[in-house]
Image 1 (tube, rainbow, N blue to C red):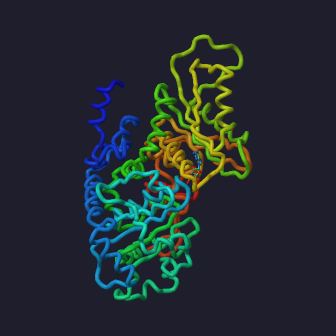
Image 2: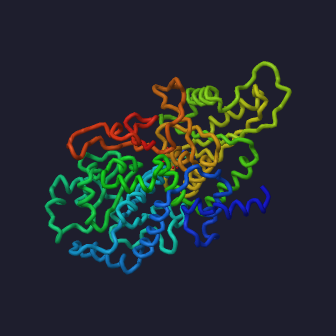
Image 3: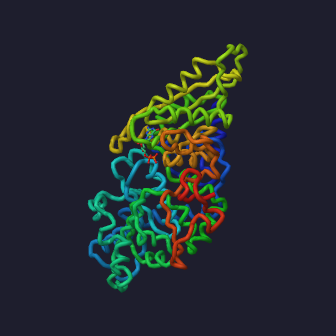
Length: 477
Ligand code: GDP
């Protein structure tokens, strides 16, 4: 693409059809307006209602964000420990918790919840959030100030904490408090180990009572958006915001997650050096939850079986050499903690010609061997790799992995998902195409709030279904 064509492209949809606000300083976060150069045009346009709600959220954030007059006033209620009259601004504090893929999914869930409940989202910077993500809202930061009074309690918040919503319900300390002594903050425990009381968060009645609480503090490792679609109060708003349900994370993710300049450098250098020139880009995301160090033969077999069966890669020829080399080239981006799968695949397609004559190149940006949560460069690479996967044309992902969910939804891609191996054997079929690009909610509640009994929440409405890779999970389709 020559420079003129590029600049026309940029002007055309730099703002993703109105999803992004204009007027940011471009150099402080190059990816925000440059990502359009690397992405295919999205099939999913934001609805006019979503655009207008985002602009009004930005205004709310500017009015209520850190160190504004309203923020300082609401903070007083935390310090004095009670509140009498309703507040001007209410807040949702997201605690930095779990792996990077999980955090990206939970932050998007928290943002949607904040939009639905007119709260201001504040992000605990944790160890690396500032290093990885640009500010998404104009003018006022989304990061929780370091001097936030409860900050040093975040790590210890759990189901036994006195302000934990589920525990308050058990003790009747939430319902019994008259408005005059209502707690100024509630801790929402939405981690996969949460109990029946914590799960009442997903009930209409509970949402009504939580409305009055100025500070909600949330710790979660799950993409809980599908269950928000089952709460009657939010139904109408959600259907106006997202006429197409399968684009929820796709749109919210593209709105809030912009890689910082160092991460954008990792993405663009890699893309230009190894992926840009290929006729087709294929992503293979390999995440093995088995214990023991890979690579495992059954996983390699499964990947090869999937790519051949679904015609994603051509077979190799072991007999005669292929003379007529086709001009078509495919670049395969492999991501994995282990380097072993990549090496075996690369060698296979180097040592043998393909039956079609196509030339296949394999590339793997890193092989970090094991998950390291505190190391800075480690998560920069992880974020860059999720993003690079999202820039491919065809995607293969692993079951249960939030890393893969982020890549597929950001990219607007419906991947082929490698079904989870049992007892170290590749399943048959090895993979299948997913119904939608939405992430899976791994630990949803199975409760009918009105009837007060258990139900199958995957069978209530047509757009909330069980996931392909986890039978008890829920996803939007
Ligand atoms: P999940 O465990 O697959 O759901 O994904 P998470 O992102 O929540 O946690 C896994 C963490 O392990 C990531 O944040 C990375 O730090 C690391 N990780 C897993 N797979 C890869 C990979 O393919 N590349 C890199 N660079 N890191 C990975």
